[in-house]
Length: 333
Image (tube, rainbow, N blue to C red):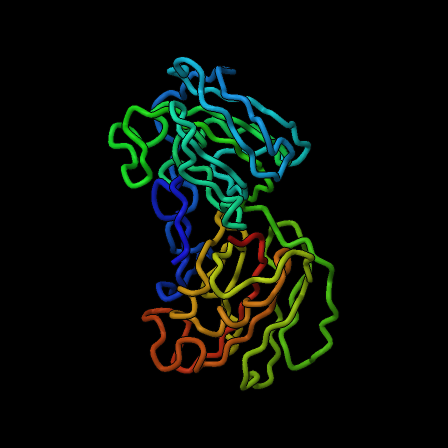
């Protein structure tokens, strides 16, 4: 079983499972919002130290080695930009993609790191989804930056700590974080347009402004087999069947072309595991597996790989409906 990051305060908000969707007339997802309300408590005081030295792995993207803390840590949140990036400025409630290493101030014991796993963290910078030390320290930083922080217990795991990781309720935690990318509800795939020359398939717009891409469904009968085709082809790594995807998407019914769910224009993104989706809409999981991050993909799902004769109640999806999806693959973990 793949190890779960210790940073998670809860399951990622915004996990959209299509088994719960019905007739969404507003166009917004009915899954949990990926934009939880911000805490009413005042933000913590942020200071620039003290912070332990990074003694090896000093370049962005390299696994760092960090010295043991010297003396007492600050009772406040200590934050230092070690390498200043020039990318997008991160805002609270954005999703971030980052590599990181975490260790305990007093002992320098490393309790978690993503470098060894070979898969960066993909998480929303929002209350309830990640520890508050990260939420306050990283808002306003630019992608491409390396940031070192020291998180006091009340902004980490509190008095309970994380006993399974050897973290006590009195431990200050030190993190080195490489901010790779960030995403919000206006993000779109940025791949290169691919010719759509099959008249038997829906035509999908190639706009990259985060707005809903128009889908024109032909009046002919739908294909009998699963279709997965690039609309915009990205240059990122290919999705693996055990990964979690961050995306914009919309779902339509072939017959009539009515939308039953979407994130575009809703102020939300969707994050789901392909393994979980395999149990819900098998054709969507299969259609995305092997496609490149940064792409917009058209997936046409025949009934036997969709909801078959057991559609969600009360919506536009009927028994034996063929489903049409457009998915902007923003990132994967």
